[in-house]
Length: 101
Image 1 (cartoon, helix red, strand yellow):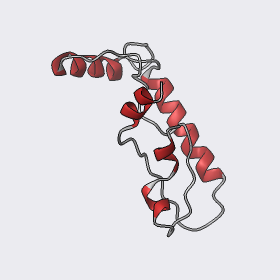
Image 2 (cartoon, helix red, strand yellow):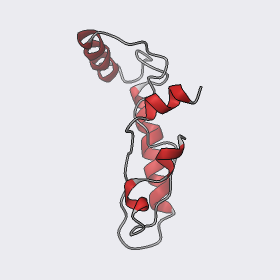
Image 3 (cartoon, one colour):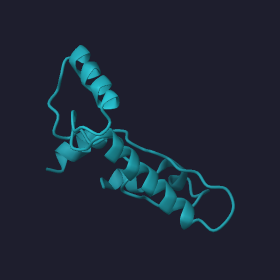
């Protein structure tokens, strides 16, 4: 996980305890080359129409949803009491991933 993602905005201010987790990222498209907008939109549509087929990126829609749901379930299971805020913080993650290679 890129270091800037380890301190979500709520944690930076010290008002809410923050803990980073790795499986709340969006669908992994790290192997997908840049596409024209229309081509990308068509692939995303196919991704949702065929959720069990690998049509875009490194995981199917079903796999991405399962990963995300499991991460949420794990967070909730380890949260004892009180309110809970979950943040999916993706700003600049792709640029940082490329920079760290």
